[in-house]
Length: 596
View 1 (tube, helix red, strand yellow):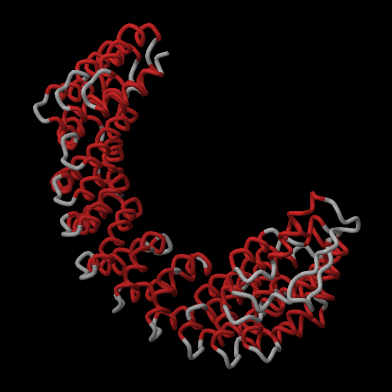
View 2 (spheres, rainbow, N blue to C red; view 1 turned 90 degrees about the horizontal axis):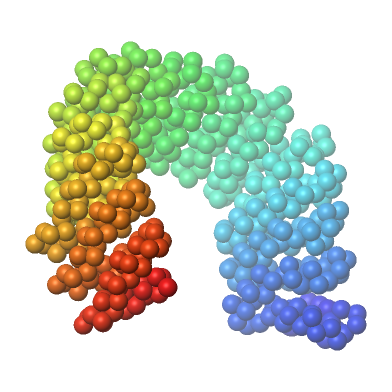
């Protein structure tokens, strides 16, 4: 294949050296489509670059295909994204020792205006560099980074920070010194986008810089990002705190990292405070337990009391993890009073986040403190007007149950469950059903039989199909929790008794329950108890029930002995095939085939 970037279309008149090889016609088509006016055709061709490269020898890929692709950097953004993605896997076609020939194309892609193209190109360039030998990185990759970092165009400079971490370990000492200087310049660049990207990648760069240069070179860059005038730049420093603190000694962390964390917590921009709240447990983990106890808790309580709901929500989500770094006295005297106020927060998202986490503190506090401090928060959230808040509390009951016991818990729990079970919104009813097996395992069989069993039966007649379906699946899960013997005496008889209910929804639910329970009940229960009810419902006056009988038979046939299928199921299906309703006929005919 001969490619010529000077022509508006690739010149592909000669396929390989021999010409008439029909097996290479698809390659010819792909090449012709590379410059087609139709974007979709160009995209398809770019995705097939591997096919083209595979048909060429590595030397021809390097000397003909790659130069041709260099001319495509002015294409549509969606095409360039796919091109960058493909070139990231192109080392195999040019050979590892020649991987650097791909860098010219990648350099062009990393300078385009669209940030999504540049991000994909940086990712692909790192992938290429990862397959290059250290000496090749020093010879070709480092100069590329220098050109990008010193470019007149901010787009190229914005791509440079993401490449430093890969090439720095392979650079010479002289190159390393220059790279550190270049990065220091990038974090102070006049363009916010460049500074932002430098902040994003600073953690990765700091992770590969020698320890002797962390305090002298990296920390000043870190402080520059932290004090930037743009909040989009400053918020990047939170992630850097976690990465950098792992490279610093404890005194250096107290001197350099903790003040930055405090500055983020008190930042005028809520997005910076939100980032600090969202990552606070990671920050505590990074600086260590001792510094967290002495320096970080006050900052955290400030976040719990922040003016912005988004910040309080993020802080509440981390309450359990942060408390693991605090002493019991600090939790009781400092953190829990703030958490208690959040239980009355005007934002439902804050209350929901607190509900999903705060009960996890019970094991840390112990029985007496849980009853004294947590139970009031628990009760308050259980009575919340928003169903999601109540559900989040119920989903975390296990931790509290293990600490204070079921008797004390159940007094408050049952009214909330009943209220949720009867909620006018069917999605709320559906959500509480999904928690019933978890509650059953936590609260025990006696509590379930006495307090919750009736609710489970009520859901079987819910007017919403999704709720009824969930209720039938719920019984199957309960059998897994309590065992077959319990099911034989408690669940199966009650479910099967619904087959004669005057409301057809209950009769329909009997069918669905049989379908759900059939795989987990003993064969004799299926044959002697469940099958007769299905056969009886085949004569129901409601067509919907009759065609569902046929559908249930399809599920039961593989589970029943062959003689039972032939003697009891097949005659019933043959009657349904002659039913007056077309749907019943269809499903019966389909099921009857399975008896053959």
